[in-house]
Length: 165
Image (cartoon, rainbow, N blue to C red; front, side, top):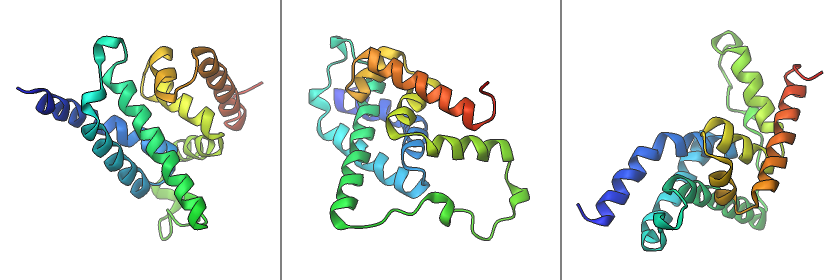
């Protein structure tokens, strides 16, 4: 198997995690799918630049590409003057509140209210299971910065969910 085929296979294995991370960043399934597609295109186009032997796992590299693809999209929307409506403005139109689990909704709503830097840290470390080093590399920040963002994010989530005291 050549390097490109191996890379494609490994990226396919990461798809569920990439979609979950992108959904956490974007708050919208359609935007998440678009961001993941863009990120995978970039990863494949730049696969020659990836060097796992330098100590950065593929997961951290690709999560960083997903994050950067989303930041690029946000900037592009701002330049175009588009207003991004919050997901709750139309995501659940026509659905019964009894069809959803309140706990999951409150966690999702709390995550959406976190500042992007904290949400990214929480998603990568607590949801995706990346090490602090891997998550810091994906976000292109020092480990100490990641640790601080993660601590503030955890504290904010606990407060929003009524568990902080």
